[in-house]
Length: 131
Image (cartoon, rainbow, N blue to C red):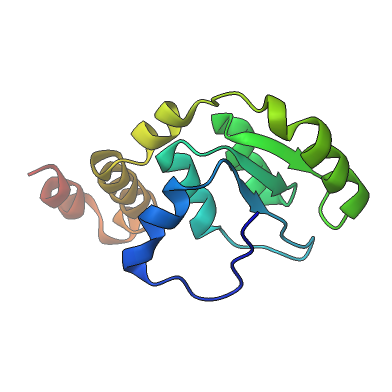
């Protein structure tokens, strides 16, 4: 078990994650953001054990990236680590990685831009984006 409570230099991220059997994300119930370590673990095919906070739970469940436990519940986390960790199979990391590749990321940004900004600029923006 390696507990990393400090900034990891960018050059060390791949080797650190590559050595992991699983990534534990024990966020607290007040967490409202997205998790960089979740995206890295998912894209590298590393199973995730995450607190069931909304955004993490949605991503882990949608892409089958691992297991969830109730945020803030140390007893449930302990049970999951003892009983489920040895049985975590290879989740659907390939699907997650494909959904997050650079082409899909770019297309997603364009869709967001079109949906949010294009109506304000009118039809000329749609023509610009399609060219």
